[in-house]
Length: 340
Ligand SMILES: Nc1ncnc2c1ncn2[C@@H]1O[C@H](COP(=O)(O)OP(=O)(O)OP(=O)(O)O)[C@@H](O)[C@H]1O
Image (cartoon, rainbow, N blue to C red; front, side, top):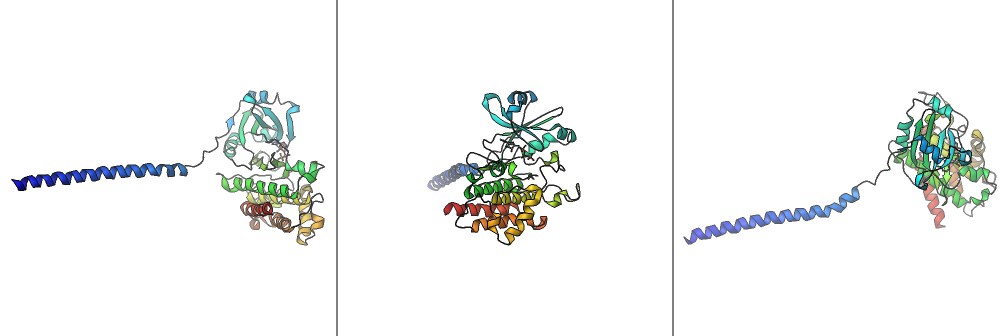
């Protein structure tokens, strides 16, 4: 009798122990799961930029006051840029594509390309907010950048001295980062197509913002405004011949921008490259550097920048550095400069 009740007691204790072990296990698992939650949140990718907004043409018309000429802020190869004011006071830059490009590109997927390039988001690029389409009309809506472009600072502003060496280096490093993002940081990658000083806008903090990227499909073979800003290979062969815009032709264009920043001279349809390369090679910097530039006591960073520029423009496509490599060098030069 005693043995039987002992046996029952053992059974009860064992089953109680088993139950509490299961409960303890469940509680521990729950605690561990709860603790893991913040890790999951950290791994969540940052929110992506929403795709381009599609604007009705009437909204664009109202925002630009009927494409009023007083609202024109610039004129380029592809179109006219207007300052637009949308509802709620939102200011944007509106690029109205010239009708000749609209007609020649009617079937070339304007909206598909705009939706794709509008996903790009980086502090050194000008984001595309939206677009508009209609019969004979193609319009791109971009963030408005409040200051002027690098071309103005270097070549149209008689007081070019206001761009000192530090500003020039900051602009070069910033533009390189923007291009690096377009080439390597966004999927699908974006070929700029026409890297030049007028496509580098400068904001109020002297931060470079690359604009007009991914639009070469609108007029790939139009030489005006492009000659000298792309390599010779660009014009070779045409479709299927290995020519046209590519990452290497963008690097070439960026090399020309560096030469302009260093020398203060215009690209002059490619003549700047021919003039600069021997001077850099023979270290004739007093002839090469912008006379408005107060030469810093430590000239080595200037020499390094000139060498980077030479590598971008002097080599064939195959042996040109990538924009990522260029951006790394310029960032380290900028960092060294800020520490002196
Ligand atoms: N997002 C913007 N915000 C403010 N101003 C802009 C903006 N985009 C362009 N601009 C102004 O409009 C001018 C013309 O720009 P656009 O890009 O059309 O021509 P471009 O750079 O001179 O030539 P291309 O068409 O060959 O690139 C620029 O120089 C700049 O002053």
